Image (cartoon, rainbow, N blue to C red; front, side, top):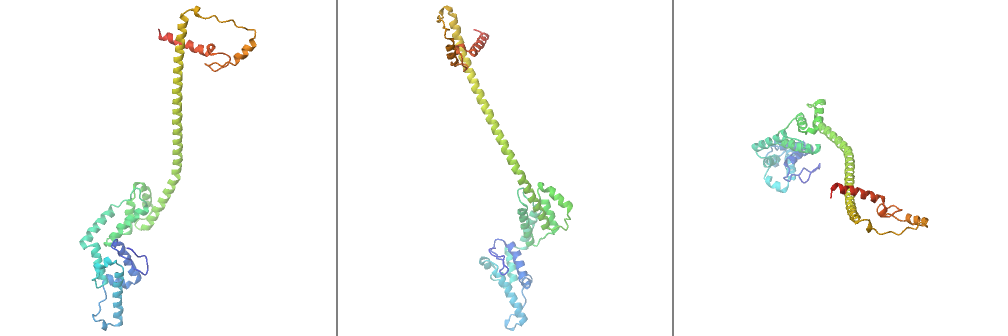
Length: 323
């Protein structure tokens, strides 16, 4: 249908949705003039062939016959009109369109059986809204109605409740226990389900931001923890490498010391006697000396107590290892 939704212009059939057009034109004709629909459903008024002999009443009836046919012709697309252009009455045109789009009685029965099967097996999809589900449901119902197969209001209500997924079972059970399904209207049921759906979405929108914040905090903590662990591992590796290098250096120094010691005391050079006459100046200069080993002032590396302890530790380690 390309046009429609007008009180003065009939719904337009373009060949794409005959069932929808059929329902629309039915209502339009009855609302415009009930006599028009009677002529389509029952047939035109029988009038004498010689129009010159018509009475005023017969002229009025003839006018209704032609008005109804004109209304039907204005309601179809030119391509569709070519199929019914030879029809002499609105009823003939209506019946032919039914035959074209709905088929013979056997074809209509087959279509009805298929739609009944869809109706019986109808289920709401998991990610589907109530509005979308109801639209799909009504397409089936309208198709059945066009094929003269209709269900009662209570049957439609029960079918909708049974079509709901497991996540809706609590709501469905509540409605079944608190409402009289034999008198409940389909619109009332859909309104109740849509209200429940809105409340569910509102609650989810309140919970999701909290989950998002918690997830971000968790990810941040996890990231910080990973950085701390990586930093600690790097520090441990650096410390281990530094200790290994230091131990290797001390071992080499200690071996040199042992080798030098085996040569005997005669190999030591006699150091000049110290002059303590200016002890204050010497102490002052000594305070400015910084040890290369422990980084403290007051002594040189050869006099460092820290180095002596390390050398002693290395000596014990070497003795334990053997020659």
